[in-house]
Image (cartoon, rainbow, N blue to C red; front, top):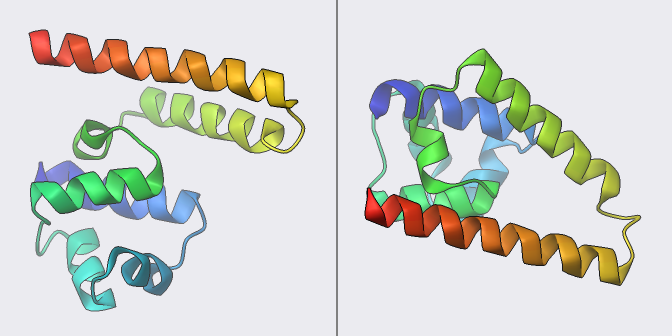
Length: 115
């Protein structure tokens, strides 16, 4: 996990244009701790990984996997779509998309438990 976690954490934080100090404050850790995570010197516990994933709005295991160019490209494309549409969707459209996303997450978690 450590090999991918550090690189992915820094990549995802910078892609979302979040300053290291801001993210550290929001997570309730010292900036030096976040810096150690991003440099691979230390790795957070599983609860903190869940907090980080929630903060970055990604699946818990996404941050610990090898983000190949294809995965990063797909992530970036999805993020761009979310960013472009978040302020222009009607309430009904937003509710429909939220419903689909929740169902997708539920199915993902069910399948993950059955593995």
